[in-house]
Length: 238
Image 1 (tube, rainbow, N blue to C red):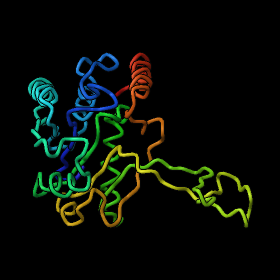
Image 2: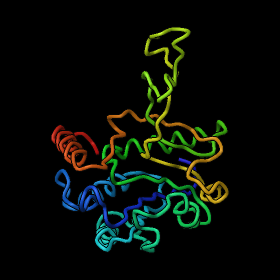
Image 3: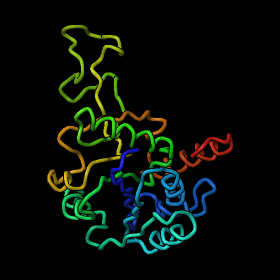
Image 4: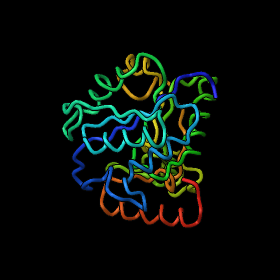
């Protein structure tokens, strides 16, 4: 791992509207929920100088402080002003006016508690891919899910031309890439320049749907909880 300062960043605002208590309610045997699982995953990642948990939720901050004492001193709870912690907060302004100014230097490794299947090993590989990407001229990294299916909008096909071939083989379709919000990486100074979480030339790190799945609805919470319980039961590393 290079000497670059990698800073883990986990935003976890108060007041989830679709899944009540989403960040901290018990999940798959983890008493402190998705937050505990994510902190345990990030604590296994070498090369992170700190793991910042940004929240306006007192419970999230308290749990993070407890784990800073008992699990990993790199964990740093950071109280977030309420103006940056509501469902009405503009994501663009949250990035440009808040996150981009948290640190003068270093590279953010931005992830979410709602992606429980992104394990420590995956984070480690993503950081390695970012470093390789820098050598190849990329300035940032985003995780994506590859879509190579028959995609239409209201006007017709998007990624193939039926005038050329009405039903091409799926493997011949032009792939599209969905940003799945698993991980974003870029230097803080570039974030300030771009006022965005994606640089001029981002490297795509493909995550299969089986890893990229996140939690936004109650049924997703239940489904992913079952998957995590199953994997823990098989002795698979998280």
